[in-house]
Image (cartoon, rainbow, N blue to C red; front, side, top):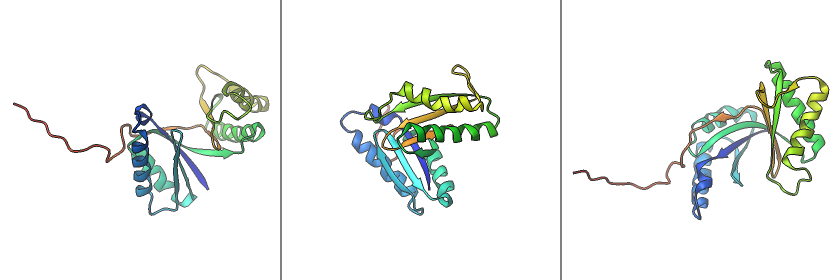
Length: 181
C-alpha cells in the first residue's frame, strides 16, 4: 500500500465556504482516480490518497495535474511513537544517501497536539538516529536533502515534495460576461 499526501494551498484562505471548495477538490480527485482502487480523503488541509503500487503511476499523473493543491509527496507512514518515527526517518535517510545526499535537515509539523513532543523535539529526536549512525551530516542552512515529518492522524515522512498546479479546483466558478465599449 502506498500513501500520497497533497498540500492544499489557496483553499485555506477562504472563509466560511471553504468546505464547498474542499468537497469539489475531493470530488475531482475521486473522479480522476475512479478507474483505480485508490482511497481518497481530505482532512485538516491535506489530501490523502492510499493506493496499490500498480495504481501509483495514475495517482502521480493525477497529482501533477490536479488544480487546487500546491504540492504533493509520496510518503512513508509510521506509528505515532518517536521510535517508529526515528526508524522511518532513518530509512528515508538511507534512500537519500543512495541518491548522493551527504547532508540533511529535518522539518517537523505536529498537527496532532496530543502527541507528547512539539515540532522542534520531533525534529531533534528524528535527526539523532540518522546523525548517530554516521550516514549524513546535519546542515540546517543548505542541506542536500530535507526530510519532512508530519504528525497528524497518522505520521507521514517524506523527502521529496513535488510542485503542482495552484489555484482553485476546477468547477468552482460560474460563467462571466464582460462588456467593453
